[in-house]
Length: 265
Image 1 (cartoon, rainbow, N blue to C red):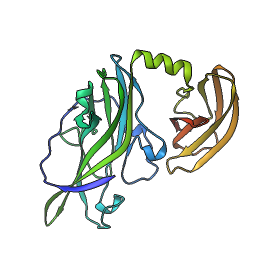
Image 2: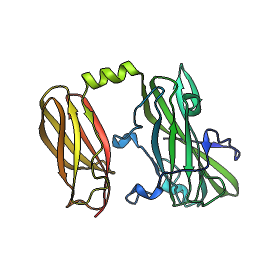
Image 3: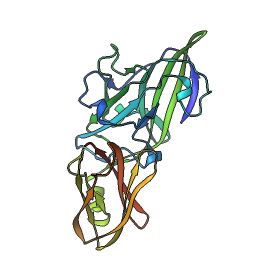
């Protein structure tokens, strides 16, 4: 995450007003500030396919003070608001708004302010990413946000969340992926109470590493499971887990896939 002092005025582009995402569906576990997906936790944007409708969600936790933000000066200065400014991707060495990829972000701030992409301190919010991708490729992505506060005069502090990759497959690459790589499906049910069933596919039978992590990156469960060529399922007992958000993954060799799991008793 990088931070740079900017002028107070900003331009918000590629964002619309009505959203379907639920800000309360993501449990921040006491974290005072952040964005999800979080690559440091093994999260990233879902892959898409060119000319096929795409959707994903970005969750935002607005800080209450500058001291809440890692790397910022430890100053107990209250944040007035946080804005989600833009999501960009890099193509041909040029950074462009995600709208150039055929996607838009629809913010949901629970009606807390007239600008749907303006978030109040301490609040949990989200934005839908949707549209139909018009380009295929593997694109580095950045998320830009700005915190506003008063320190003598109104100030603005921009934050850049990096290390994202958005993969948009073409039709050929999707078929190749299905033939040559393992895949990890969405657990059902999710949210889960006592147990959830996790589907995955393998191109050849063998052992894979199954793991579950909390949002601090701590290992909750790790085991070796066997799978056959083709479709497989793994039933995971969630009855002893605390309510919250977890990440589950399977790994074979150097290939690792990760998904999000919500536990709610």
